[in-house]
Length: 206
Image (tube, rainbow, N blue to C red; front, side, top):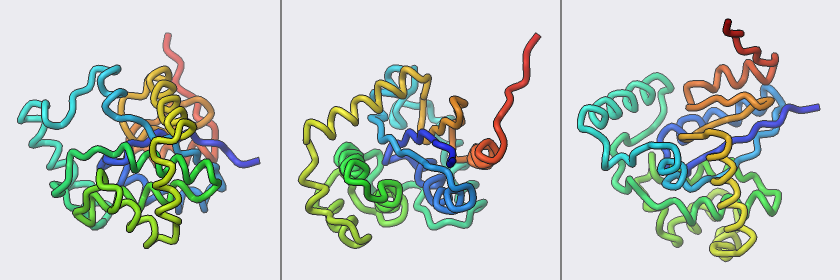
């Protein structure tokens, strides 16, 4: 029986972009079922004490770019660490990914398409036409998925994902849960893969 992973994702996050590129290989290697749950990053951040990029101290902003460049080089991935359209409203992208999941399509693949729009393609994912074109180019029915934007069932799942994330102490994206254990950040994917192969046992404290 395959392992089940809850995968909380903001579709504008650079680290979600990085981690998302590696997920297909991990899924193939482990046979795990990753259940993507797009979240409203602003709500999660506000509920858990985080600050949007524009409001962070200059020291944090400078180091953020250093880290992004390091990870870009480490994984040898195409990435604009200061993309033209960031920060960006990813609500419509999140809703289309949820619609794809509800239709039993490859929602993770679609999420990676939208993330690449931001971090590779210098494209504005707040623009529905951009999302439709990107989805169509990846073999999805972009118009059909876009028609679900604002749909009550989609919006209910979007909000439920967000509320659930806050309730589970998620404070950023990407966050993964394996057997109830939380792993935050694309740099924890090695641990996620290990946990999928062998249960994670936290050290006991005295």
